[in-house]
Length: 213
Image 1 (spheres, one colour):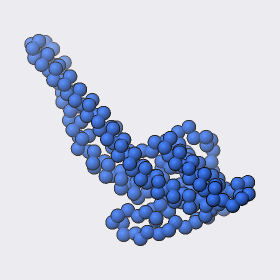
Image 2 (cartoon, one colour):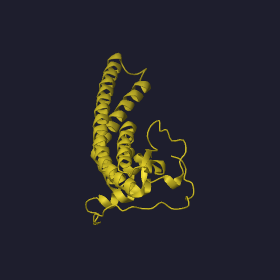
Image 3 (spheres, one colour):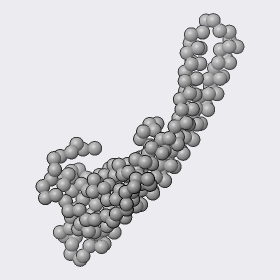
């Protein structure tokens, strides 16, 4: 487990959230707009972890679970030390010494497995809370942005099994949503006043192509 990547989005959950936002945006469009309305893509995974709130939450989770990770690393080192001692003393230790070391190693291994399972469950729960908190507010930002800019559908380019094969960078609204989210929901202590998200027209010409994620 990599503590630097603690904030992760469940693909199915983000896809469902985005689908809801797309339907809401489409329902708010004037009759007949569907035939000429715009379509956009949003990397929900990137958007959530790149917001100021997402970065802050990632750092907080890393700090929160660091002691338990360190404890597991210590256990793993103890297990490896026992294995090395057994290998180095196969011909010098008595059967009683070998059995004692093996029993201790097995006990530590079981303890490590249990702690690892508990930690992963707690990390997943904490991540889910963060994603739910940020995701819900982000869908509100996206809903308003889509209605004010005439988008009738927004697809999640980060969703598992995404149907998107190609999308021009000119229709990617990820950076717009991140910026508007940070304006609407500034993190505590940032000193930035809350601002209502404003419509941001897309550029007439597409920017240089970005590497696909």
